Amino acid sequence: MFENIEVTKFISDMLTPVVMLSACGLFLLGLQNKFSNIITRLRELTEERRELKLQDQMNKFQQSRLNSIEKQIGGLLNRARLDKDSILSIYAGMIFFLLASLSIAVKDLGWILRSDIFTLILFLIGTGFVFAGTVFAYLEVRISYRVVQIEVEEHKQE
Image 1 (tube, rainbow, N blue to C red):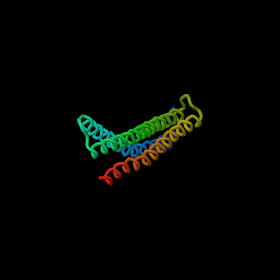
Image 2 (cartoon, rainbow, N blue to C red):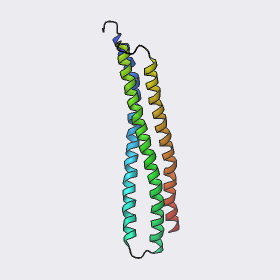
Image 3 (tube, helix red, strand yellow):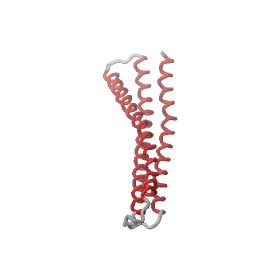
């Protein structure tokens, strides 16, 4: 059963999708760190909004700050959604890269699969998910600048 297998080629074939897993892991590290920071900032702004709303009377500055917080929360929620979608897409891509690697093993061992087309399809689906995750990350970065602009504009008015 194993006598016809070229071991080094077998290992090399299986490692190709694993390289993509490593790249995705690095990408995820940055995305999850950013996602965590966005969630922390959302919680801080939500708490500040709650404290402002508890006051009986708000002066002009406090009302302006409340309006700014509302706008920032909306932008941060959009950013968090895009980061979440990006992270989930990258994870889905990783699952397909793992399946591609396993299908290489199954094919090379002579079990069930006799063609490389299934492996190619799995790899391409994984690549598609990584592409989608990258697009979501791109869109999130575009929004992040707008959220910062809201806060900067608030400080100009002070």
